[in-house]
Length: 429
Ligand code: NAD
Image 1: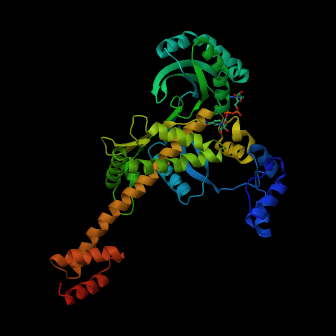
Image 2 (image 1 turned 30 degrees about the vertical axis):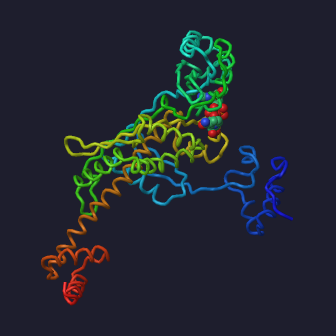
């Protein structure tokens, strides 16, 4: 019989029955089944309520980054990540930031954007004015959807309307600006956007298609900054001044080149995502927000900026959307997410956003310091190799030839320099 992935009612089966089907399909053995059935901190009964067609859970290493001083408060940072060195690098960079008084981080209010797409309008600018003139009614309809959020001081606060030109003609896009307080807010905003859609259709001559949250959460951002004394950046024979200059060069490269900016930002997201995941937040939403924000001026740019102060110290800033919550979604359901929030000692979504922004900044510092000093180190090594070549008796062109070989072989020693010199001389170089 040929195998088929067309299975009706897979979702209605028990976890055990689903595992049996997968076992047969993929020829799994008893050890595989044992692994699938093994339960971790997120038990299968609970996980089965979170997603569809569940067969098991997928654990990630959870580590603690140390040394973080953010807005004058000490934090131990839970990070869920599979990549080596990230937690160590964050802890190391946090220590350097500590030397300058720690990281200062401020998040804006939790304003999310819900979009309502109005199409087939003959008079888009007139429709825009009509929608704006009905603002109070639109906000009222939106707020009726979530009395709990309104009770906590949140809810739809304002609207803005844009006319955009598209392949299928002009569209009138209404943005519902919703303060979602301690929730990430996707469900809350989507429900509100859906509710106001028919009213917008009624007062205009158009047809609404999409009504959904925008992940370009530029009204809900975090700004983190740190001053790092140059002495705290010095590394194995490389002075703090040299490291600062190397970091500024690395940043300038990222600011000028999207190929580098992508990797620069990936380094930031190593730290950001690890905390987002540990706290049960939606990292796809954070990723989408980060990269769309990075390209908001039509060119992909780094999410951090690094500068040198008058005294020669390093200052860095990070600015990016940070739509995270401590209410709703997996944050409330996943026991490890709850535990992560407990370790952080966080009471509001705003504070969580501030901590994550600080981690992103520190992670970026660690990455570009390592990259910049590696470059400086290599420069130092070739200089050092030339000296060794001269000490071994090389002259003229032979100095460079011997030094290059020493660097390539990573054996910058006088005995090896002498051997290479003899070899080259025999070859008549
Ligand atoms: P939710 O709907 O589970 O919880 C939010 C609700 O909790 C609020 O609407 C409010 O009624 C209530 N609440 C109680 N106390 C509150 C407080 N102090 N502050 C704010 N609200 C309070 O969760 P959500 O945050 O609306 O949705 C998050 C989930 O939506 C995530 O799991 C995400 O993955 C998912 N999602 C994301 C997208 C997207 O990013 N494009 C789209 C759809 C769904």
